[in-house]
Length: 363
Image (cartoon, rainbow, N blue to C red):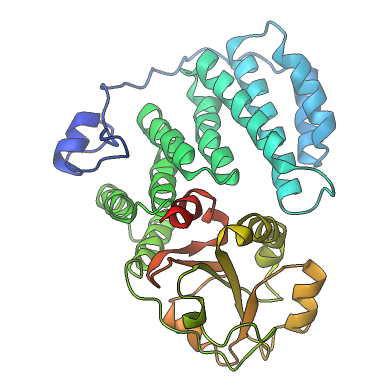
């Protein structure tokens, strides 16, 4: 078997001969690359300012870390040290943005922080691209920062580039998976499936945790293209609708969650922002939860109102039959349905983004 690290064009010919991105260019087009040999010399010592900044970062003191790293960014340092400072700076902007994204920093807009992170990571790649450690991670984080901005097209482009430039590293391998996720999240289902199958072909280890995630992503995408089945609602919180059929003609986002789910709670600020952004453009957000869940920390109505989540309505599914219908095995899960009632995406809320909703609202 020819491994994808040998040649990009070999990968195209043998695995994905028809895989095209928008605009007609191959996902795996480009010239052959090679990974530079690692320098056997001892790495230069990190200056105290860098160590101090990293300590602030570990403590979640993002502003202190950013201040010190911005100072190092301007200094003339050994290439390895400067590369590390840039990547740590990008990581600090990203981490602060993520804290704001999850509602931990009141009044802070996460988007400018993610954009700053992208700029710093791109600078690291431009100046020190041959230093795999830590620049491969920085390249990967360009994709992740775009993902947090909801721009799945830009995320896919960045992950694709990371895979080709750093495919021998763990970040290159992870980037291939994220490429599939980003393609799926923008409605490019067939391309996403081809990417995931290619990953499993070249990384067939059954015990591989990343491989298990890929298999789960594939199972989620199997629902795409089917008519959306109804929800098994024992009642509705607002009484605005009686079934999903009442929303035919609208783009619908169905959100499965639980009050005990910490990850769900961290995503609620994101969900609130998306509802406020998209509900005026013909997108209806519908929640699904089990009011009799023995692990519930509070009544569903109390939880939703305390988080100020403006669902159009919320289905109470006491036996979680809707979970089985939509193959939900982890929370928070999302299903996107187009105006004709067809499932267009199914996945984790992290990857919902804006790209697919922009497309569907124009159809």
